[in-house]
Image (tube, rainbow, N blue to C red; front, side):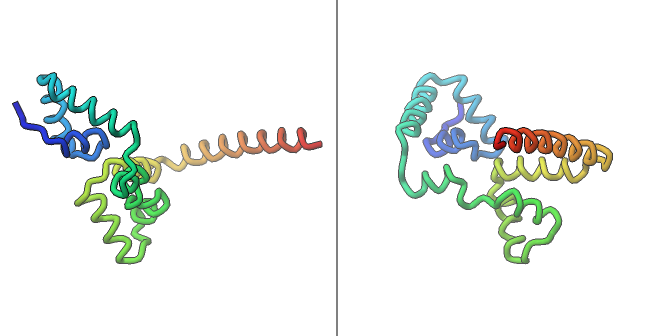
Length: 139
């Protein structure tokens, strides 16, 4: 059985582990009731509200680039320092939240033009209908 540390369990809860490490933690959790109890204890601590600077920093994702910055990163339109930081955040840190956002943006970028036009038309139609209802209720 794999020896899992408290830090790894915390990383597991925060979805901050690499896929391979997550798999190892999950395997250990399946095999060990004491480890599952430890995980439940960590979850209770987290739910009570850890208000340390580090916990708040992680929960609020203060070091994560915005979705707009990730889009600019894809287009290589950021300042060199910012481009390097986002690259470090994605490649070295491996932030799963930002990697998922980046994958979504890449998928949108590769979407066929016909699908983009249709989606934009649906957004416009739904928004135009919503605005019409708002104007009518104000009269």
